[in-house]
Amino acid sequence: MNEPTGVTQKRIRTPRKGPGRPAAGESLTPQEVTEAALRLILAEGEGALTMRRLGEVLGVRAMALYNHFPNKEAILDAVASLAFASMPVPPDKGHWRTRIKGLCFGIRGMALQQPNVFRVAMTRRVPPEKALPHIAAALSAFADAGLPPAAQAVAYQTVRLYVRAHCLWEIEELGVHRDGASAGFTHATTDLSKTAAAAKMVFAPDPDRQFEAGLDLILRGLQVSKER
Image (cartoon, rainbow, N blue to C red; front, side):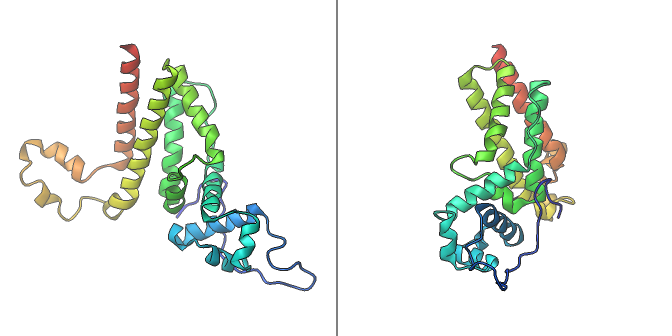
């Protein structure tokens, strides 16, 4: 599985205390804790992340982690922020649609390359700190499209939810059938002879084409709503 730019996946290992080294946990930094949590999630999924397990990975007692983070949720927030930090923010110039699509394809790239991290990054109740430049870039693009502030907010949430839902569909539902139609394709389309061409694309979709086509549909709708 490929890795997104800026995030390095390292082998999970437990450091050993050598002569003259500080006691376990004393030399840890929040960055080291976050990176270890990221590697654990990459390798084993979010469900594997507990304070005890992360302490084992770092070679410290779980209580030592509370010197850096108040709880597991704070660590997940930091992991989500680290994931967004690895994603480039499109420049604040060019056509607004091109900028929005650049942001959306960047998020989809993270989803397909590192689905475990995507789930964490896109399900935080409060946006991660490093996601704020991406949010600002999206709102700026919608402002350049001529949308007023309230419509910018609606447009942002609509596009964000579309990208999140599409990526989860690709990861959780389509993944096992990515190379073609599901085993039940023929049976499922038996009664759809009048719409066979469309049915084929529903049951055996091209996810790349569908992602961009759906996004274009939303963006065209935003343009039309602005012109009314």
